[in-house]
Amino acid sequence: MDADPTAAAAPGPDPRNDADAGPDPRDDAEAGPRRVRLVLPGQWGPLFDTDPGAATDAEGDAGADAVPPRVLVVEATETFSARPMHRAKAHLWLSALRHRVAELGDRAEHVRTTTVAEALAGRDDLEVVDPPTRTLRELVRSASPAVRILPSRGFVTDEADFAAWVAGREGRLLMEDFYEGVRRREDWLMDGPGPAGGRFSLDDENRNPPPKGATTLGLPDPVWPDEDEIDDEVRRQLDAWEADGTVRFVGEDDRRRFAVTAAEAEAALEDFVETRLGDFGPFEDAMLANDWTMAHSLLSVPMNLGVLDPRHVVERVLRAHAEGDAPLASVEGFVRQVAGWRDYVWHLYWHLGPAYVTDNDALGAREELPAWWTSLDASEVEAACLSESLDAVRRHGWTHHIQRLMVLGNWSLQRGYRPDQLTEWFTDVFVDGTDWVMPANIVGMSQHADGGVVATKPYASGGRYIDKMSDHCGSCRYSPTVRVGEDACPFTAGYWALLARAEPALRDNGRMRWPLRQMRDLADLDEVVAQEAARRMP
Image (cartoon, rainbow, N blue to C red):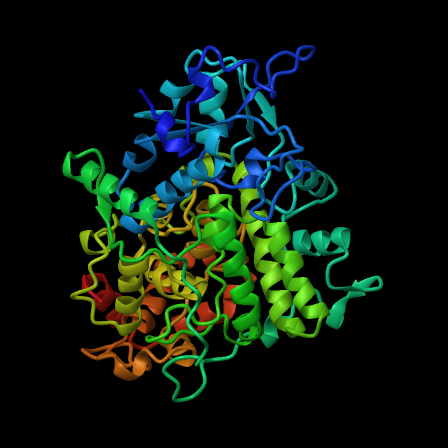
């Protein structure tokens, strides 16, 4: 274990290592020494090391009249070595950590070690905001039994809110109902007792295909953060770890495109509100090969890193609407993603437990993930939509939600990829992937492996949906209207093959009766099933 006091980047002697430095003003003679605040992955912003109500400066750091805690920042290689991680994700995580150490200055105790447990062993002076994952919660409680646990942060709602909501319900825990409850409690987008616009969801106004003939939405490029010497240092560190076999990476790491500090995140939020929020709603489901960001916010990364408070994000977007700078449908759709879906899947992570990923396989999905998929190698993938989406993951570690759900997830669902492996894959290769965010998204929403706990039906489609919502099919060697033969779209044929395979599990689902009836009426169903069983590369 290697303590690194120089990483605090503060001039002069370190008072922690100076016997003559005198008493620390953070120590209270009556209450005993002030505890050291431990921050863990996903907690690399002021929200987690500066308590609510403390005076702060423009960057969100504690002001001179506050008494902020010391902060233990553990840089453990196990964070990056457990499974092959996208190189860009590793860069973002390590850059966020080291940028926060630099910002904290003398407050930071930066410890470099192999495991987090090594850094915590023997410590009886720690406190921590309850971490967002089971692994981290179990780790801090076992490695440092004397640790003081503070209530969780980083979400709009807390565990008590969700528990109260669950206690008052019978039957399924629908996201729509949870979201409505959040809106009512917070008085967000409400018009008296009812929702603004007359409905809690304006999703039907937010399903536009891309403009006909367009290759981009024509919006300004997002404002990317400026890299600095810390980013250079991070690249050298990742190179060294990879060279000595400590870690394995997939994907590329070009320039950093996501915020890793509170100041960068605030700039990214303002840029989104000013240049893309208005178009977010209408085109949130659209795809264009030459526009990888479209009108999306790119804020999931800083929120999941812990450098951007989602409540602040929602309130900023609501202010834009109140000031007449953003239409209701766009604002509602965005608020639903942040205060609805994001909080909902975090609460389900705890509510459904660890067996949710390992024990759910309602559709009998047993296929191992192929090597070309796990290595992000789209070079031999001929289906344009899948090739572009997989290559975007390789290049950026990110795609927007429709590419995840209706291209990558749709393909995986049709091919019967194992949902537990797929959950790990999405967690590892997406720069906003975390252990808490992916289970309900993949096992539930994308793969329907839970049999309907999260989604009422499988999110599967043929090529016609992709053709409608993108410009991919025009350049593709496959035809979205063909299901048999050399030109058969692997999504169109794969859709019918999926229904044939999963019919026993789906026949009692009321929303699937018509699709299953259509499937049974196909004269060439056996040929379609045989064709797709033999297909290995799309």
